[in-house]
Length: 108
Image (tube, rainbow, N blue to C red; front, side, top):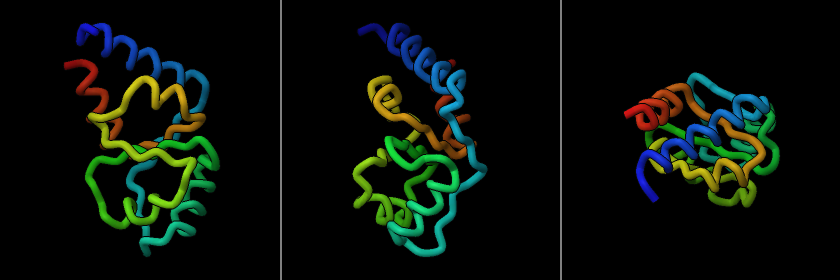
């Protein structure tokens, strides 16, 4: 598939999430402890209780360890977000820096 077509499809998927109110943007997601229960509680407060997606700017070991036992949560780095993953999940939770990096990748 041509690069421009992939970018167009990804832009359309992001637009759909924004228009549907399914995108939550946080400044920075911090965990005090690398505990699954802590992460699930934090994401539930943001509205991501099932079919959620969390995107982050840097690979932080605490977040990775906390989420690996949550079957409804998909983790992705900003440059590795696919159209299928966006459409498959009900909710998108993204850090502001991750969203800016994704936006730059779509425009570039």
